Length: 137
Image (cartoon, rainbow, N blue to C red; front, side, top):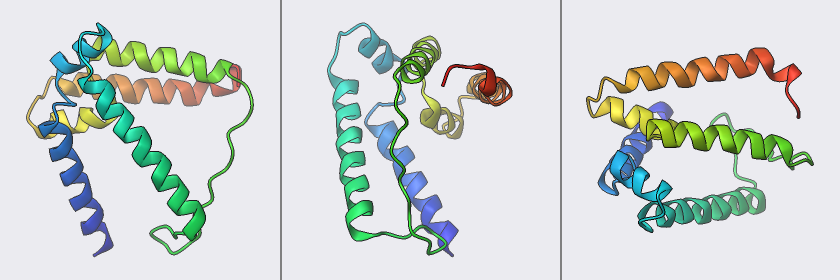
């Protein structure tokens, strides 16, 4: 029964991202060309929602799906990993026109060519797992 509520939240999230045009290649193109505030506004709302959510989890000791306390560790020092990771993430986002979440939304909407993007994302994740010990952290 618990799984159903999480699936429902996922469906609602997909509908919201679709209706807000956050999965639109054109909107993403506008963002990377600095032609429109639309996507930046959505990103700022997501950041604000994340900040509020993290603070609620920390202050109210909210439990996870199994009833265990959620532990949020501090990030390790160092900016190289975030800069390199951000550049790769941004390049992939700009080239493909979708970040990881919208990949599944676009598949659900019937854009089957996005399977190639999903394959690339999974391959990149796999390669990171293989090479992570050799990369700067």
